[in-house]
Amino acid sequence: MFSTFFVADEEGRPVGAAPSGMSGGVAAGGPAQGPAALSGLMSGRSTFGGGKRRRTTSTGHAMSEAQEGKIKLAFFVAIVGVVLTVLGVGTEFWVELAAPKHFYNNQTCLTAHYGLWKGCTKTLWVADIDPERESCGPAELPGESNCTYFKFFTTGENAVMFQKTTKKNLNVASAMLAMLSLFLMVMGAICITMALSKEILFFLKPASVCFTLSGVLVLLSLVVFHQSVLALLASDHTVPLHHELSWSVSCVGCAAAVLIVGGILFLLLALPYNPWRKCLPHKDSSSSSS
Image (cartoon, rainbow, N blue to C red; front, side):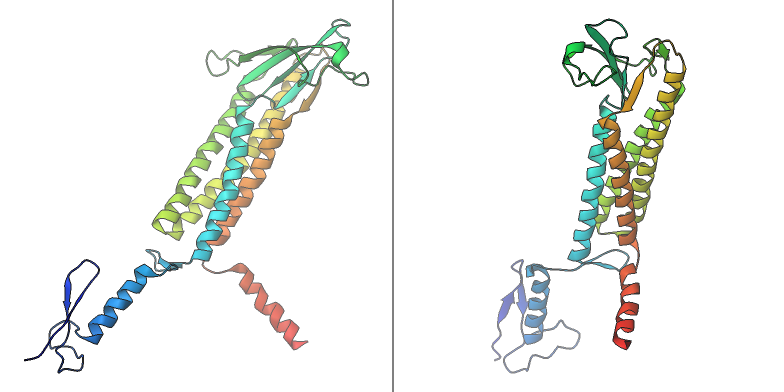
């Protein structure tokens, strides 16, 4: 009689081996046995036990760990742009308006600052202002503040500040561009999440388009908002005002640049070839020939 031995697989099911009298061949019409079955089982385990494994996408392209790390790094850059955009859009320090320091009286003066959704007027003490400064401000000084949300989006009324009237069409357009850019950022984040979880490189292309367009829309929002400020100043010349863009605009401007850079990075990662490798061989060949 031939003695046999069994090898259990990972789920505990026995795998039959070849009899001791045979040299580990494969029976006709049957599965691999003996050393062949054992080697096949070990090779199957190696795909699960290895710490580093290559991921294969549904399109047949392998996503290496280095490529996955580059995608995560580019995603981090885009997330920084998203955070800066949310910070800038949610705050009301887009522009500061200041009347002359002694326009109303010698003790207090008025300043105002507003953003896309809300405007604030603030009464400051003239004694707290820098003597070399001609206008009232800055708005960070302590004083009595009064903030109200604009009625552009509810009753459609224009806001009045320093006897000047805002242009609601420009203000609403600037706000809508900012909201559309935030929507594109969310869509881009979903595409990157799908690319990393489902291991499909195709999602990098729509993510690149979403983040790049969101950065462009943020820049357009800044341009339209600046035009609304100029229209506000030109609506009435009774009160001379000094205006300056504040730190919220700086956040939004940096966010637009970061988003565009993130979109370009995703586009480079979505290319089927590395553009740098196309240039490096020429440099190597020229250096070797010299």
